[in-house]
Image (cartoon, rainbow, N blue to C red):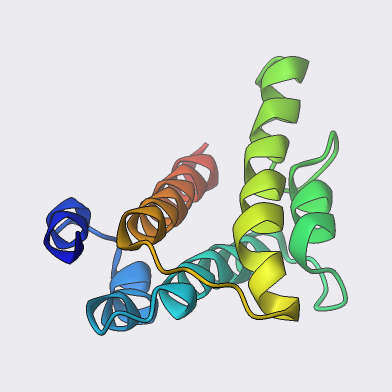
Length: 132
């Protein structure tokens, strides 16, 4: 199963994910890899949004991508704005927050690689949003 997961890990990962999550993934520390990847997304959202350190996790995503959030695409339709906020909040809530507060057993390399790849996609989305 490890070989399958290694094959799925994109060779084109963003430099941030390659530095933060890939080393943990390669050594088989899937919990750390998934957490590091999602933490990278959270840090990037904070940098781009300019929101304070007191906001984190799901609340940060809701503030950054809410109706008047600094990262909200104001040209997008309302439903698309809410969907984007929900994608970011859901990813952070499901994959970063639990590991912030308790031990999460990621023993499936395929599940971990999917979380890492999701974080990579979110970073690409942030790049697109930053240029609009």
